[in-house]
Length: 168
Image 1: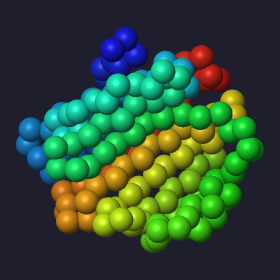
Image 2: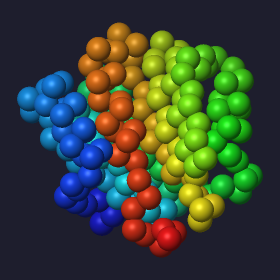
Image 3: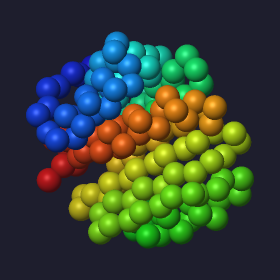
Image 4: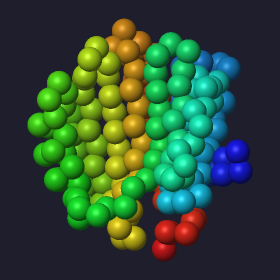
């Protein structure tokens, strides 16, 4: 695919990510996805999330699946409803069938985590000054908590606004 590329990073998030990977599995290697449309990027082990789904026609992001039932999505959307980090958490907390067990907000980001249909989910959103919300969503079977929990923080911290058409 033309909008997937490997990039080298020397950021603290990458160092933390690599540390988590090494502690979790000796064969994992980081891969950084960069979205051409909204300019979000995220880094994750592509030998775990190794099944890339086709990118949607609108080019808003991409999803990867693992053989054990986990999924990771890195995407962007226009903030047409003028959503805020606190508004996002409040809305997520009322979704039927979902139980939010953790949430945190700051001026331009929000994180939620919880359970739904026997799976654990984790979502981090960045609210850009360019009216774009960039998201990383990770979902995995609750039975695999010990495998995925050590990876979540580093993957979520890797979500950034990369250089792109909407970056400032």
